[in-house]
Image 1 (cartoon, each protein chain N blue to C red):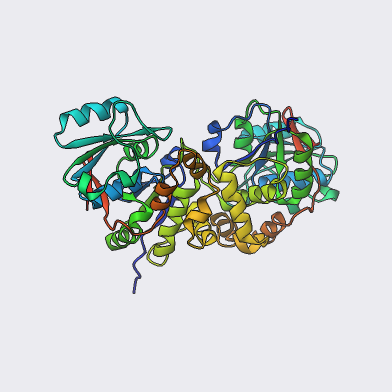
Image 2 (image 1 turned 135 degrees about the vertical axis):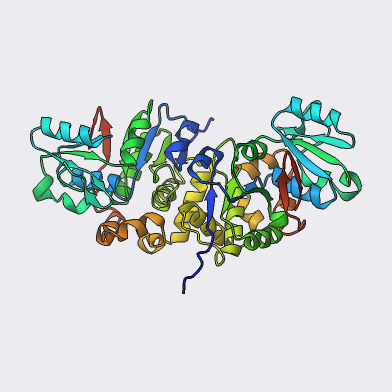
Length: 241
Length: 241
């Protein structure tokens, strides 16, 4: 009797390491906890028609102008970028505001990584806000998974890796995970004991964004399962699966 | 009264991320625990005149032939490479054999990383075998430090990162460490509780090399302070500091 092999799960710690992974036929989960993928998850759960991630501010402005019922979003140094309308925080997109609208969004790290991935079976959005829903979806597909951390300008960051560890913690019995970065992510998750906010208060990104007064948003981004949706990329649009 | 800033310490998790770090004027520690930097440390402490790391097998053979009293070393898949004389394990270089000799060595990851670093103040060799001696030296120099993990074909590995964490654990009060990879390395070190062998038995590299019967060598590589020397690069030669 042959036993069916489990699919594999791996963790890519930085976009600069993406070329080392074979994503053909795999589900690639884009992870940008502070805050792009958290905000995308929240906006879609709150009824946004779709989210369109774009690489540049000018593209964001042009696309926003061409789509009726759209809003544009992007931040630099904790402030809305000139020419755009809103920022990158989940709380800016409650149901009563975002429902039925298209969110056109530019971010530094998450968008760039999303556009770097080619050949994947599907690109999915991950955040603590949809942790369990995402894990259920990944387990149901029977495909290899790459957890791709957006990091910070290609530098390893703790929050994206911690989230990868949270996913592996839930999926470790349904997937094979032989890569050391997956094991390290799981160790970091153990180390956090599930107290994500406390664990990350010492991280470089938390410290940087706290200086802009964003503590409440960061705490929100670290709250599991507030927005149980699975955002997936279809063409240029991110929509609910 | 102005307070003198502490120097900084950072961790580069893969040669593919080296370009993100400014090594000008810094001490760069090359880390390739299984087994290049462990073997270099052991050979020098056991009296080797110097170690010359080279990129290719042909270069290793040619250089070995041109230097009287030299031995050549290199492995592939756990076996000595054809045309070379010895392997990459520390136990192959006891005092009675290596004393006074030049070791010309080619390895996959450590040598490549060492040759990638340009502009550093000094390149130093790190391993558990010289952990305390190395830390004392780094603390005495008052310069920025980059702990550079050789990794495995650019992929993150646990053993090099764990060693970086062991260094930071000792130096955390003498250096500033703001980068998330340094914090993650320190977390992994905490997680190991100092039981390096147990912690790493699940790592990909340990599993791969154990299949070649190298368990004793791996345990040796994880034993702190057996060889209290500080190997540094001078020109093309690695010598005792």
